[in-house]
Length: 201
Image 1: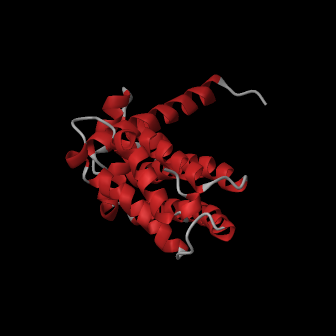
Image 2 (image 1 turned 90 degrees about the vertical axis):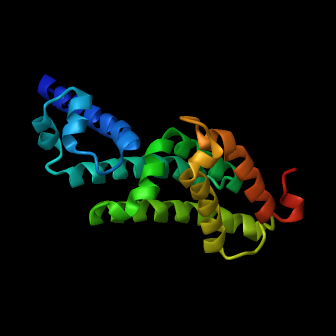
């Protein structure tokens, strides 16, 4: 089926709005007016509403897009029975790519509209499901200590979130916390959860 020039333009404008919104929200937070996003994107304010009828629609689409990207990458690893090491490495890679946006998300999530909060909860549930599938296989193999899966997941997430929420303690300016501390966090976490014969020195 042939796509018209107008449809291509619409798709490109929508993509530009999304990319600009990621950048602007990462820098200014989720309460930024849509007019600022339009100005940064170099489009009319009305163009945003042609694609996203309300700011809540735009926010929800951003979160869904972020969740889809993270979920797709982790799903493939979980499906092929990969190790918890590789799953968490991939999790860190996604977070590093979207670090500024995700940091805003976890620090401002209570101010999000209800639909966006629900989308965020779905993102975390999807991550928890992939994590559980992999970690339970490792527990059954004896490579990970037999501990409650939800506590293993919450400990990992809490560790990562602590560093992201306290970026000013761990990095200068625009340096990536995940890039600088991700390997150390992963190594420490794996040493905590692995049985001695499965620990990486």
